[in-house]
Image 1 (cartoon, rainbow, N blue to C red):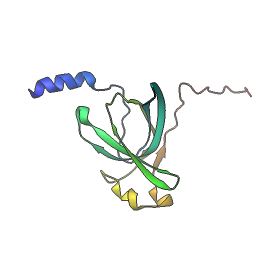
Image 2: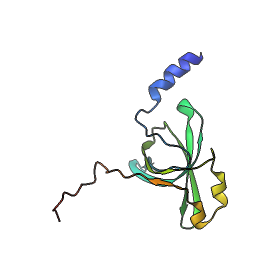
Image 3: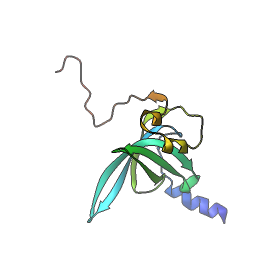
Image 4: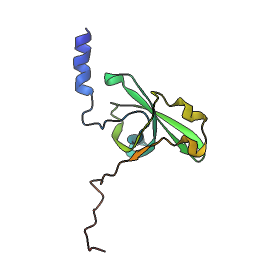
Length: 130
């Protein structure tokens, strides 16, 4: 029975997802259906938890919006997630960053390094061009 479930789940698992860990800053673009239309909405924040395995893997992203902490839980292999990109790699020594909920201001920052990539839809300037 377990083998059959794994076989069905393997067809639904997304391929080509970036590798990320707790403490990284992620940009998750999800599809939202409103009045028959589908639009894309970005949510960028610090990854504070990863839970589960396989098709049931989920993660929580936290950000500060207008001075208020906002957390959003995403299913990793959900069809409503359009794309996930790692904006910044974080360096932490915990598996769950729940302590960030009590921090205010600059104390919520996670130490790490920026990742510089060029987006495919962003035009790259050539030298000498104005």
